[in-house]
Image 1 (cartoon, one colour):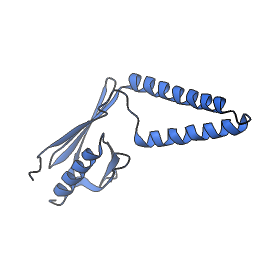
Image 2: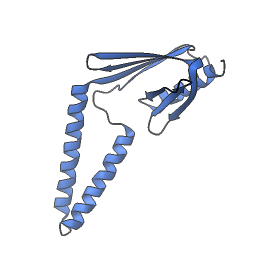
Image 3: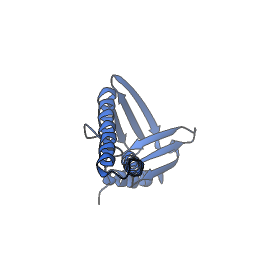
Length: 149
């Protein structure tokens, strides 16, 4: 199989997204709200469901508004020599270039679709992915090219 000479992806791809870790904590909070309101309000199912639905509705509404107003977007371009990270928040653009020879350590999480790179200077670069396939492509690409240094 021929390895690509360049790998690039954008995060997030969708207009409205929730991180997997964020979804996990929202589900835990919704269950706690449901259980607490069920046992606090004389075991009334309807009120417990209503309070849980209100919590979820407010959470998703606030999350949607924040994402639309902040308009954050990350673009990554990985070559055999370096990784370019372009972070855009509304009208502000930050560009960083990380040379692969400067990477001391990297950690990727295939469950929560994230990771980081740590350079020899101690700087940490956070990575976000949309799918597990992107994480696996990045991991195989970076392992192949880090061995060459």
